[in-house]
Length: 344
Length: 277
Image 1 (cartoon, rainbow over the protein chains, first blue to last red):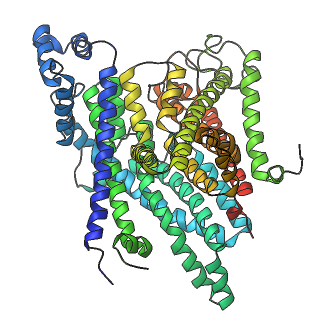
Image 2 (cartoon, rainbow over the protein chains, first blue to last red):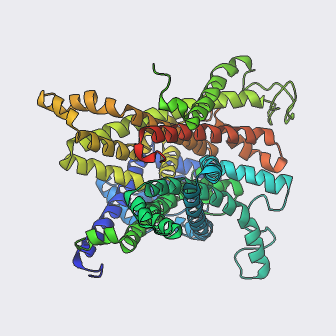
Image 3 (cartoon, rainbow over the protein chains, first blue to last red):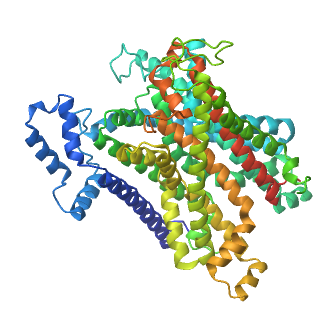
């Protein structure tokens, strides 16, 4: 058997990489066009807003205007603007944040990124593992178990992340106040430190946002898995192996492995959608992640920060999808065969 | 009409469509019996009572009136966004599937690209930058960003229909490709198109809520998302004013669940692979 590192695999890799690069390019272009379609002169608005907030008094209005004009490059032709914009976006040079003034957008995002990731990654993984297990059991056992799992999952997974967050918050922070009502850590502590107190306070604040995302993920995965498992349990190979007298455990094991594969695509997509879903969840919990930064950016009309958050969210999603595509090749022998040029 | 249609035997379908019609009826008729949702008619934060089923909010507005008007607006936005997304998805999917070749390649690359861009983030940026705040525009941008799923599934349906023999007949008769798509392909997957619409409508309601909640929706309307936005701004959770945020939360969940139930039930009835043996 050839290793999947043969030239056709490289082609596959290159093709996928090109696709995701193209996607990032399209996403950036959409934003570029939307920004240019904005009514009025964006810089004039920006300047007047800054002055309105008493921030622009350091400079003269004219100087501020020229400064922004230069920074955004709006005095140059559109094509050149576009290339400068693309270059900045690809090199993570998102400009200076207006609401966190001396800080650059990159710094603001760097500060909130770890919060989002520590919230998202565990909740996606736990949701994936538990959800698939439940879904498979539901499809296999049928009857009451199936109805129970299916209906519970359907209800929970249809609840928007933020609605579920609100209800959890009400139940466990107001009626039975065992968890704090919001924030990422206690106000008494100053920020990230590896002391016991800080970690305890972090976990205390972490539980509710984590649960609200994870439970919904479990529901979503369980529903998908149930359908996949039903397909597998009705397939010819399953009946054939059953006639051959294979043990129940082995049969279900085979079906589970086959049913799990399409779910892994779902895992990649979950990453994309949950990033969007967690945006609002973070706002509900005042959790200091990317979503919260984006919310503040929108409130304070901090366009560079909005743009930067979007670029980072898109990039992370694309990266997750890309890694998942590659991962797929390694775990699915059928796909590996196709792309590595093996004959089945 | 046949009354023994398998759909009518499906409990999921009946529950789903029943819940949906309950909300539609509530949204269509209840506002006539309620006071103006924007009128301040009582003391602030009055808890639920016999007179006011869901009490009042910070401005002394009747929350139940806000609630039924909000459902109405959310359903409207959901339907419009659903129609736009389904329309785009069906056209792109059917053309890609039927034409094949280069056109298929181009349309599907576009679909796949749009599919992986995180939709809510894209919506947030578009809504934040354009600053046009009205419900039709909101529904339009939701529809325009969420068609790729539909296009993908419609394409695969078209591919399978195209291979069937009955399509040969109009082809031999010399009908144009557009005519064949409209007259022969689309009618044969009407149930499928409706299933896609149900999902898109649910997505539209959810997107509206998400966008309105973070302050990017129209400010002069009452929708379920706006009610939740006010609930967040006034910190109703911290104050324990459950009657402001619990009803919209449940309404959104039930609405989207009922739409998904309709979709799942139709899938089970029309898709033989989903039938349990």
